[in-house]
Length: 127
Image (cartoon, rainbow, N blue to C red; front, top):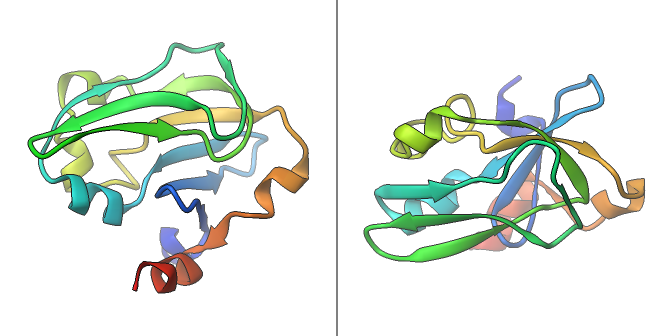
């Protein structure tokens, strides 16, 4: 089973993956990265900070544009991909394995997941 079969995506192009240990990995979809182009800078939050669903938790800059990144569900940051601070181009290489952004513990209700799409549905939305 590929990772895209297990992720849920938001309309703002973030993905969330259940790590099956009470935490979730959050990142940007490959579509978002393709639209941005070569990534040159990424600002991620610190561990322990809580965000509500839809709040900006990170910013990203590419050769084309700067964008805000929104948390797809409410959660507390429990891990940050520190490698991206020194090598933001990892996002261009592999958004799912190397280019994940943060890991969270959800703090909202399960209903927050209801408006997220399975990857296949997300891809259809893009067309």
